[in-house]
Image: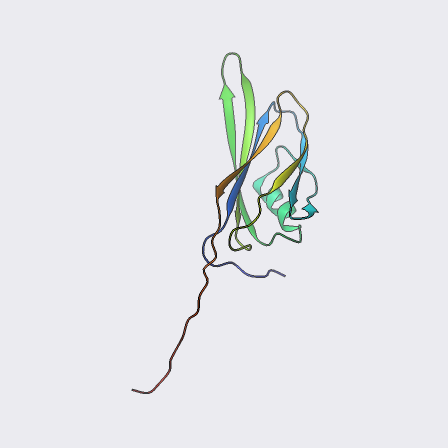
Length: 130
């Protein structure tokens, strides 16, 4: 069961894979938990399912885009996943990586796009007859 949909705005993080197009695997760490293995060409939906299987992560929204560089001396393939933590309101810890990458110049980088912020306060409603 899902806890809440958050208030305020959500933390947004990204993961960027670059290297050749050989399939590699990696795992993610969040809080004290490690994810199942993901392939370096995982879909946004696959990334979402793996993240949401972790007990410390609630609802996420994931998008994926391709990064290409086709220069004379360089032939680089890449993917970037953008992860919005919808069900974890406020400022949260960053995802860390457990790399198991293969292939020439393969790497994964984490980027914090935006810290989250939780709206806090009280609302007072007074009912009366006029």
